[in-house]
Image (cartoon, rainbow over all chains, first blue to last red; front, side, top):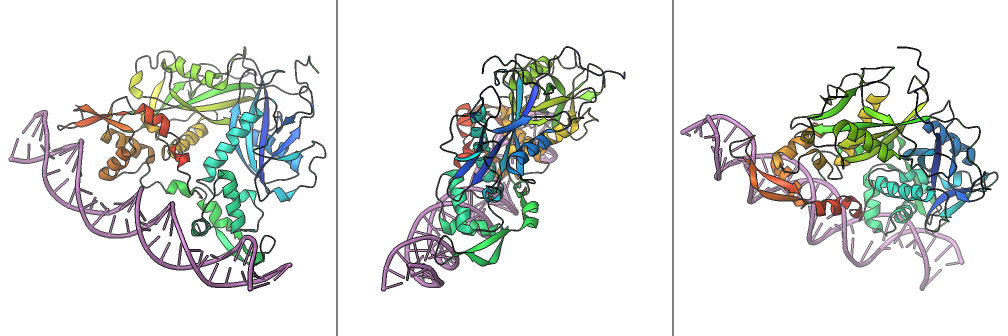
Length: 235
Length: 235
DNA sequence: ACAAAAGTGTTCAAGATACACCCATGG
DNA sequence: CCATGGGTGTATCTTGAACACTTTTGT
């Protein structure tokens, strides 16, 4: 029984993680891209990625890669999809586990572009990307829309304190439609997820808009509220 | 530039697909399991799986594996998650791309258990499974519930002709609750996805229940209706 | 005083839930 | 003729959509 150290006759492959990193600048959704640092396709636009090391899992690898680029930890991150077409990498068979991340765009800016020539680009105006990275981005965008319609994940793209108009701009950017502000505000507040602050953001209007913070407790509790929502499901 | 044939200094891993195969026997949700055919852990309960071959992608590998076990093609199948913990396989580093499949349990029965000692087991009473296969099953069950609340995927578990009471039993099995049959029927029919047949199923009642078929055209069109449903999303 | 964005309330329509009776048939 | 499961309708409530005016304040 014991003593087997290899499965024989099977071929082994490289395994990489690639990160689709979203940010929101107040106007439109952004994507964090880098210029690839090695051949082939060196200096071409690419997602940030890296090979999975022998001692790490996928989440660990993705977090490491994200940290290396942004300096951030504890970022919202989610496995998107595993890409494995035999010819997706021209060099050798490489499978990619794609993760998408939502970050507060203000949280780093600083160390940007140093080592990797990273840049935020508008999701609409993304340049040509290497390999199947564009397909990853498309899928990530779809999943973001899908998921944000059900779960309160878009808060991950905002700073700790934000206003309702800011939040509305974010939702409008994600779905590329406009919302009625009265209905939007009522709906958002009815979730009970927001705590009104005493101070205002005076940058985007004379009157100023009240800041809100996320109620972390309720956020964690209600994140899957959707599932309790199953009284009479069906379509 | 050209001529690179390997990425140097990286370690390569085995890549496998594992299939979580669901069926419905009219009473409860079932899982199709096999007894593993090779060492180590030979003859232990396991999901059906196989290594990804050099010339195939993940979908191809999963379809091949499923076909080998069931003889079926064109089955509903969806990538669930990539599992990559460094120690998930005691023999050597192996990453697993898990797929879940929904099949009409009647469609094969026949060749069952020949080569693989396959068996349908109730989801509740599943035996201990090797490696992290139980975690895969749990996740698949969650995703099934999640997705079936939004998309009409459960039809994939039924034969081409089915009755409303059968469908209701299926939903009740998936969510482990009971529905009011009047509301259930109205809701289901209001989707416009079902076409009433002239004949009845007389097996489970004296009066008989009308058969329905899925309107494939509308099924494909409305599968993502959820996304059109985004007029005013938010949570 | 006025421009510009924030904030708020009401009406109406649609969808969801709760609930009870009659129907068809095989035995 | 009766037991069993199939099939349908109505009243009520909740939720979402449409829609317009007042408030604040910097200039």
